[in-house]
Amino acid sequence: MKKIKIAIPATVANLVCGFDILGMALNDPYDIMELELIDEPVININHTDGYGLPEEADKNVAGVALQAFIKDYGKQVGFNVIVHKNIKPGSGLGSSAAGSAGAVVAANHLLNDHFSKEDLVRFAMNGEKLATGVKHADNVAPCIYGGITLVRSVFPLDIISLAAPDLFVTVVHPQIEVKTSDARQILRKEVQLKNAIKQWGNIAGLVAGILKNDIPLIGRSLEDVIIEPVRSILIPGFDEVKNNSKQAGALGGGISGSGPSIFMLSENETIAKQIEMVMVDIYTAIGIEYKTYVTTINSQGVKILSSE
Amino acid sequence: MKKIKIAIPATVANLVCGFDILGMALNDPYDIMELELIDEPVININHTDGYGLPEEADKNVAGVALQAFIKDYGKQVGFNVIVHKNIKPGSGLGSSAAGSAGAVVAANHLLNDHFSKEDLVRFAMNGEKLATGVKHADNVAPCIYGGITLVRSVFPLDIISLAAPDLFVTVVHPQIEVKTSDARQILRKEVQLKNAIKQWGNIAGLVAGILKNDIPLIGRSLEDVIIEPVRSILIPGFDEVKNNSKQAGALGGGISGSGPSIFMLSENETIAKQIEMVMVDIYTAIGIEYKTYVTTINSQGVKILSSE
Image (cartoon, rainbow over all chains, first blue to last red; front, side, top):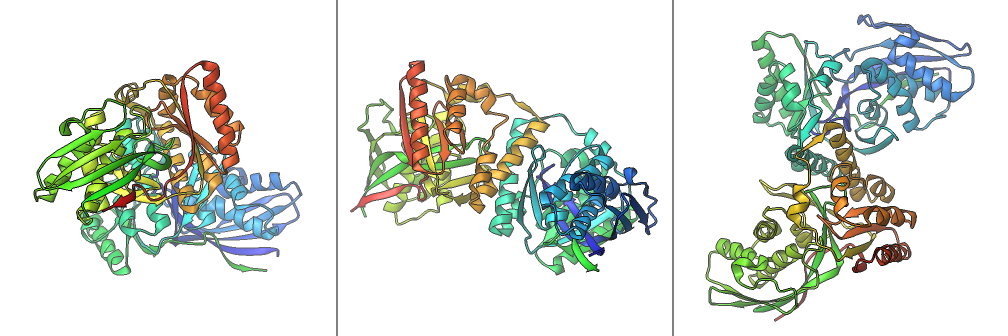
């Protein structure tokens, strides 16, 4: 195998109550990436999208992830990389994670699955470090493992693959900018113990609901008393989207990653599409450009489209 | 059915990282209770143990739980109650929960399972309110449901039965007094967000480990960065018990409820008994009286011994 073409899923980090530990892969949107294995020790990156992302390897999330990969691999290899990005940078849908995770998964296939998935997460976290300043894994883990993942710990890395419930996901991306670093800075460094207890009750409930496939329990557990009350202020229309989506039948939902995208889970496609209409109505009324997706949970992570 | 005799399990609240939300039932120690259904609207309580607990219904945990039960039942009934307590009050092993939970489970059997388990938890919480000042359910829930339970929320009550992993439990009860109210007061009202994130990562890991029967994951998740560092100060020998037990092969463990009992989980009886020796050596050296138990996780909760 010398060349590979893959589809890389968007991801929803945090999953409402699971700040910094939970993440979920989506079937839509997704990036397309092509990797070619070459003998020279270079990484050439070309973007065919119009987002103007840097193409020098050490300024590009795929580039730094591949550098970490090659360093551990030990032998002299290089890659030609072509990226067709569909997950908009800054959307809160794991755009940077898709770049770094996709690159190392593709490289690993080209080198006969030399590394474990956990190793790949470790390499991909270098991309997150470049993009956000922090080596977090709550987007790259579901991108690589698929479904819903738990990052119990980053140092040492401990990833638990949970499951991919048969649920629909409606996403709206209001086209405003929320920087991950800003979204992190407005959080208080201390939280009330009673709120922390509420939060970990909900996290435990959500994990149990996912593993027992108890959909009402998933719904009851989708509550965030710590992060959402602060971060949602940065997203116009958030409360209205959440309340009206629930009235339309959503199990629950919240901010995707650090925003501005908002996601809602529901049990069937009819409800998921009604929720999309709710979102369209709200952002049309507010007068903010938006993009919506009605999709399902991606169970496999990065998908190989072709290889030769 | 007019009379019933039951065995009521001791319980371990918190399960290290799951402060206020997780609990586990044990096969040993256990209380024995006899209930007789009578027509007069009175609750007569007699203790055959020597702990000197109050026997007036409204000062006794079984009494107040039965009062709540009868109030909801609506019809005129009363009970003669005989309690043989083996779970020492103040041990941190759910002694008060056993009294209140056992009484309402027995009463419910005598009245043809009129109420759901969730209702019974609600009644039993009145006993916890009397004993500790707080309506908490992390001991009464596993006592009634068996195995390991999650109390996602108290108001409204939301109990999730997880599982009863095939593990051994070694318990030591150093005979010192730690009041639940004191153990609660020394906790800080605020916690650092980064510690809360670590804690909920561990809780999520523990719940996933229990439901996936992933024993190493259970072991890795048994870490408490918030409550234990504060409360363990009240228990002489705690750090030594924990460190030496782990060296002897324990998966992990910590304070049972608010202490002073300490529990350790392990994969087989040989290790569980070695851990018991570790505990014996430590408290013998310190010169504190102690009691130990080597037992397993109780999967069924309150058990009917006889009925007529």
